[in-house]
Length: 86
Image 1 (tube, rainbow, N blue to C red):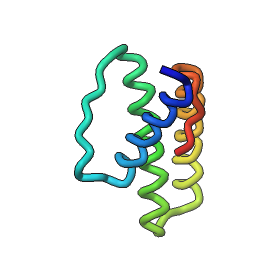
Image 2: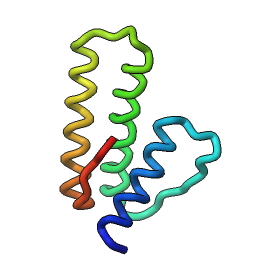
Image 3: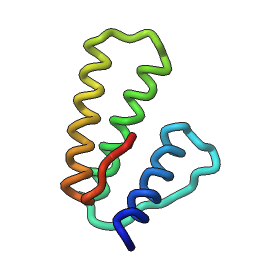
């Protein structure tokens, strides 16, 4: 699978997850470390999304969530060699 195809699939699934698509039904299996890296990227991106959606947050909360998301994005790059866009 090409890098671009892998990126497209992962980002498509991730965006549906972030928006809580009720039709999303996917099971991920494979290397435990890779699954943890992907899970952290999903959860940290979702946290930023939820904080912004709530509109009742402090700058500290937002900055900490963004920092967590940025670290997760770096780990996605190291693990999968793709740029995390979410």
